[in-house]
Image (cartoon, rainbow, N blue to C red; front, side):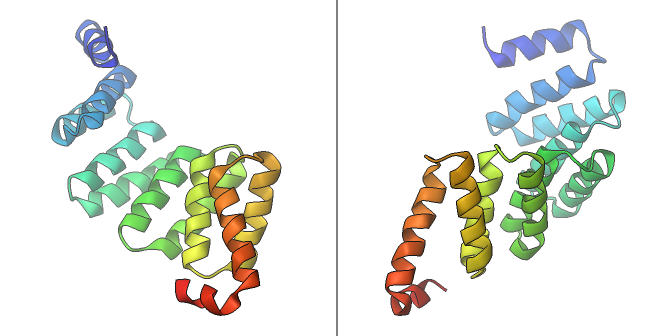
Length: 177
């Protein structure tokens, strides 16, 4: 009847299915049941120890549970297992931003954007960071590339509009930085 009941049923019938355990954990995480999710992820890890998506989810859930050292270890392990994993780079970058380490997040977002040009979340967060970090050349290049790929991208359009306003009124633009 739902994602939750589907994955609970799969786990009951196949208790060593690491992917099913992870997906069951994802349903718990979506409900804010982080401790339950982490338990399911750890159990899944026993059966699928080299699964980058699982390591990324362990990073996310440990971040939510206030365990930053464990979170970072899991994000890094995910990227060791699969260096070209877009989700690993994106979610690690989001976590880095949340930790006040935005400069460290930029290379991960750049990598995620290069690996999957059509993944808008990476582009949006990277635009935000370029804007906040006062990197106008990088921001302009990313806006242009994004609008070339997705002409109606709302974030790129908003930043492009702001960029035009900044060019017209440079003194007021300094208030943002």
